[in-house]
Each structure stands twice: as C-alpha cells, then as structure tokens.
Amino acid sequence: LAGSGVCLSRNNDNGIFQRSMNDGSIRFSVAASTKNGIRDASMSHHCGDSANMLRTLIDSVSRQVFLALDSSIKSKGVQVMLPSYSSFLDLMNKGNHLEHLHAYFPRSVASSTTESIETMRLHTDNGLMIAMTAGLYENGVPTESSGLYIALPDQEQVKVTVEDDSLILL
Image 1: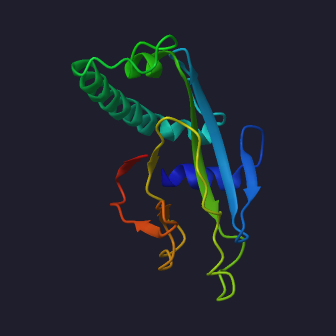
Image 2: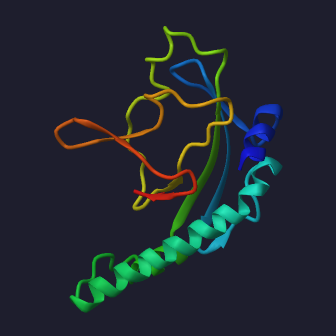
C-alpha cells in the first residue's frame, strides 16, 4: 500500500481527509463503507483503489472468523443477536461497515523534543471487530517507541509486535 500513502500525501482534494496529529505529523485518509451487504466499489478517492485487494482479504478473513464464532455458539445453543441479526455472518452481510486507509507523514524531521510525543492518544475504536494492518513506515526506520500499544485493565501499556504483512483483529 506504499503507493496509496504517497498518492494521499500529494493529492489534497475532495475525498481525502487531512488531520494534524499530536506530534505534528499529518494524517491523510480515505474511506469506504458497506451497508446491507452492498460494498462501495472503491474508496472515497482514487488513491484508495490499490486497497481493493486488502479489502477483499479482510472481508474473507472476517467471514471465516464469524463462521467459526457462529459454529461455536450454535453448538452451545446460544442466540446473542436476536431480533436484529440471526448470526455473526448475518451481521456481516447486513450490518454497516466502515473502512479507512490512513497514511501518516511527519510535518518535519523529528527532533529529540518531539520523539516522546504520541502521534495520537490511547483510544478505543467503536465496532464489534476491528481489522487492521501493521503500520507501514516509508520515511525511515520507526523509533523504538513507535507502534501499536494496548492498554491492559490495570492501565499497563503493552507494545504489540507483529510481522509487517500481518492482519490484526481486535
């Protein structure tokens, strides 16, 4: 998806959302949605077109996970989503899904005073299941503190270590 990131940073027009982050970096984003099983043909901008293979892969993996969940709860006689949805797969087919592609670019070369500032504060995304990739660092090697962190119930923060080509399900 490296090409998508470069495309996003060079096109500041309709369909690309831009946000300044806590550390001064800029986040460029495109979005898509799926409603009632009808998937947007592309992201909100042509820069998201290269994400179609990734979107298809995430859809396939999510379906497999939801089928496994359905199989597990069916064997136990559990019905958890009635009356809105009859199963997790039904939720996937008829529910609303939001998809985002983000690219982060430093505003300027990082200095020792900005390396300790978080790009964004620890937060919780909404959703039954979040699927995401590991961060792609195009402009050099990430710092030791860069990456994805999860806060445990006791507020301890744990750094998540994954391979670059991993799909992370939260």
